[in-house]
Image (cartoon, rainbow, N blue to C red):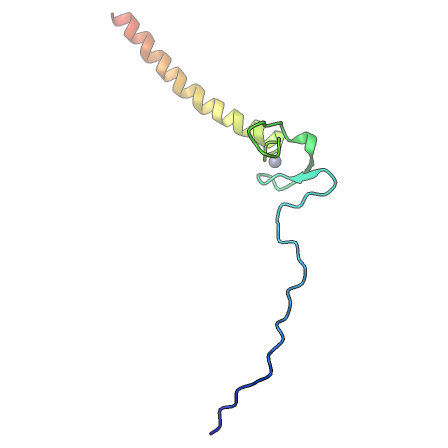
Length: 91
Ligand SMILES: [Zn+2]
């Protein structure tokens, strides 16, 4: 049996030049990672803490999130309020 090494190098197939970044921005449009829609930059609220200067999620998504956060916050705040009110009454 003869094991033949192939001296000939197999030419590495060069990967086609593909943009592998999922975040494609076309003409001032940015894809919102939450709803996955391409939206104009104006639909993204300004966020000075972000390097891009814009929030990563669009306004509708941001509003929905804020509303949910507010609702959750409100419930806990009401409970706290009730507790302090009762404490005030007892004293
Ligand atoms: Zn969105």
